[in-house]
Length: 207
View 1 (cartoon, one colour):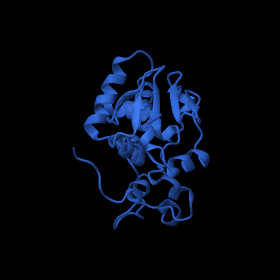
View 2 (view 1 turned 90 degrees about the horizontal axis):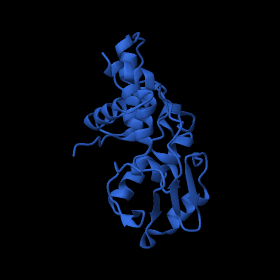
View 3 (view 1 turned 45 degrees about the vertical axis):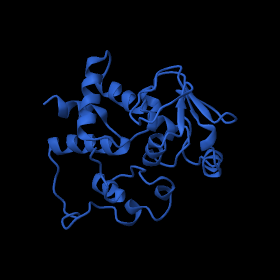
View 4 (view 1 turned 90 degrees about the vertical axis):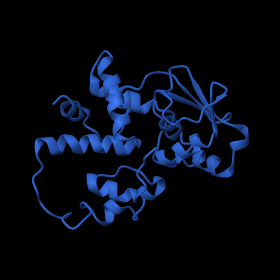
């Protein structure tokens, strides 16, 4: 499957906002946004006024890059969200939040979503006692994700102990002893702290 393999700090600079794609580095002075707060490339410091479509496109790209999904996957999530009852934009974010790699990241098992995705692919987690290595697996209310016994190591325990700026959202519960977390409810919009204006994404796909 195709995936972006270039420098992720470039993506943050393109969107003009921290997307926290490199984990702890994003909280230090080495963050690319803090050092060069303008878009990459020859014309990155230009003052071109964005169009309405351009603003909508940037919001969609921002959401894609935060959650690390491809265009086709993202479009599929949008269509699924559009079929559900309620506000399409909020439904979309709920679907993205319930991805297994994002749940692993939210529980503090990884410093970034990219690291969480790699850990899931390498088979380090069980869902309700069964090994799952699909990052896009959608967690349901009541399901529990747990770190496999053979995967428990000093780095993960250190991440849990020094979770830092990341706090476990209200829709998840965490058992530090068993190193497991449970989805206790569907995420509410106020529990999703991503800097995305989802209504602009809906407007783009509604054109």
